[in-house]
Amino acid sequence: MKASARIAVAIFRVLYRLLLRWSVTGTENVPAEGACILIANHVHLADPVLLMLAFPRHITFLAKEELFRAPIVGKVMRDGGMFPVARAGSMEQKREVVRKAEELLADGRVLAVFPEGQRSPSGVMQKARPGAAVLALHSGAPLIPVAIAGTEQLKGPWWIFRRPRVTVTIGVPFRLHTTELRFSRSETARHTDELMRRLAALLPPGRQGIYAD
Image 1 (cartoon, rainbow, N blue to C red):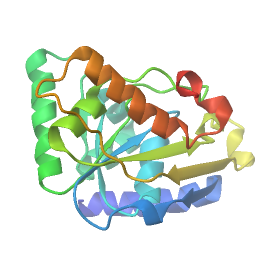
Image 2 (cartoon, rainbow, N blue to C red):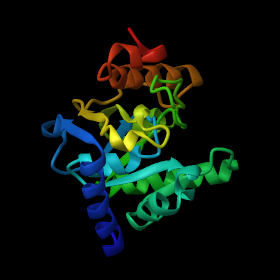
Image 3 (cartoon, rainbow, N blue to C red):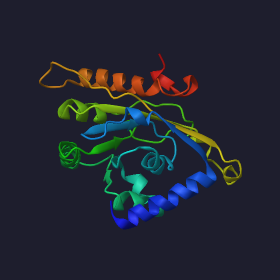
Image 4 (tube, rainbow, N blue to C red):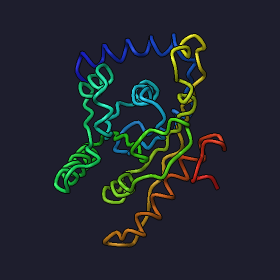
């Protein structure tokens, strides 16, 4: 992480403490080293920085390019080693993203992914894309579910006076298992549902959406 990113994160840490009542549980579930894929629900533009502050290891984001357009957050993410994904990119661009992600995992990094691919302003989980499951199956890296609750309150100009309560819950790592050499669409969809249900289990029942049991 560049020095500019470290300074920006320190500033954000102070701002988030002033503006939010946020807490983190489950940090003991994070392996001290080795590759892993962090999967999180996505509610607000504040989520990426919140994850950077809450997670006990440095994380690298695989996130949609729109997040990088925010002037301050985008710079912090780029300087922190994050890289954007074009949702409507060509097949070659998508393959390049997968190659880059696999290189990062092979290097023992923590790769953070928002499987839903877009924000849910209501805070209710939406249907996920298969990217996280594909990466986990190809790399064999464990997945760590991280649930964010409360950032859906950050609307309008007056929320800063309320200091909303926000929680970050880090779940137990798990792996996806398969005996298939090639992953069919149905196989990938099944594994995507599995990882999303693990993530949903960390959220309040009213936020689990289509992944509620």
